Image (cartoon, rainbow, N blue to C red; front, top):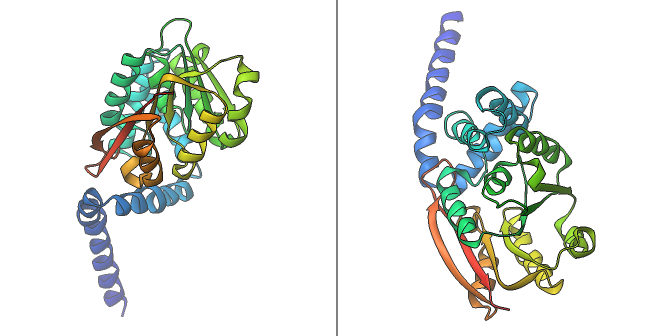
Length: 264
């Protein structure tokens, strides 16, 4: 009886290992919804339970262990390594990050807005390319994420260029002009809840925070997807849009960024 139980346990463990090591990763690489389910729901929750920490806290630890303080590129490179080799994370990532870098360099904004800070990956990536005197306002709904992001932003040494505000984007956007004394944004990076892309874009329009030539760059428009946003910016006469094809962060699943220029 004992030997039978032991044999079943060994076989079960072997099957689970094969599934975890080869079969599931192969399936995940070709399916967007499987990738998100496996990485962002199952594995992340298991690691939260096993380690007693959250993913942002684990990424902060990876940054503090592997990155050079005051070097923003080493900070997001440490997060990229962690996301590709240790634990998948929904940052814009290294591949799409190059597209973000290119668009941002082209725009060279004086004042930029990021919707969705998460752990501060894209915040650091954006801030390190800003010209002296330029400013990035980044919005994060989750206080726990914001607390970690502040530490990562400071570790990268770009805190003087960044203002992180906590709360719902829908409540904060109408207060931007009065609170920060700005007329409009030159660049907006959308990377928060996908169902907020359209409402927040319309809110930015209504509040006069977009000027002629403002560039909006939206992440994850294919996976997990933002079909209503794509429909809106591609069919509105107020925008000129272009899709940049890439891959979902740290995978081979198709994703991309949508660049939309506000025409007034």
